[in-house]
Image (tube, rainbow, N blue to C red):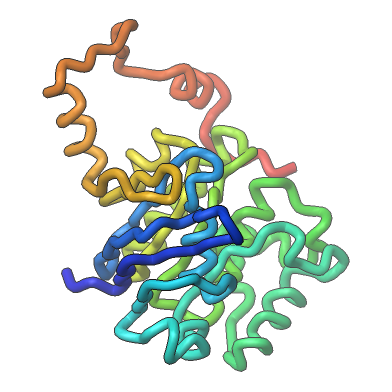
Length: 252
């Protein structure tokens, strides 16, 4: 696979603070790439620079062969960015919001098809403020797809969701990727990154520490002699929870 994103020596400084310190990485076309790190590591800053939402101090970013310096508007037209809840008018219905975003992109959309994709067809006439947390997250992903983007950026897409909503969102992200869209995401949930991501980059204090597949990183740690203090079982407490309560969404 060819690279659809290339980041070279990216730096972002705020006065005396260096939030991103010369990082370089590539994202391959059609993959799900996770950028992982503790709070303040530089994850969101990096994403916002790539999304054209924040100026960089130096370095190069190329998306689909387009330079961030030379073609920011063209890049905006081929990417999808997940907005936080504050980015939506709370009193508009989902259909009204989708039509609003479609107008901003100057594209025609089938709103019911888009809502069906994220299991929100029955909520078409509901106001955004009436949605549950999981519904809001699914709707935010629907808005990233309005312009048929080549790349979508998801910043901690499942934070605060219950296990059913999390697993449903994982399926949605995999479905989007299976249709050829490249996905770049951040998350604090390592099980989420392990399940979804083809590769991950771990960033700390503004620097990339390593980039590899989750399996390779885990195998490397084991080869170093790492052993869990508690034996790992074939199921987790989350698996128990889902087995007892079911996997269907609880949106009401």
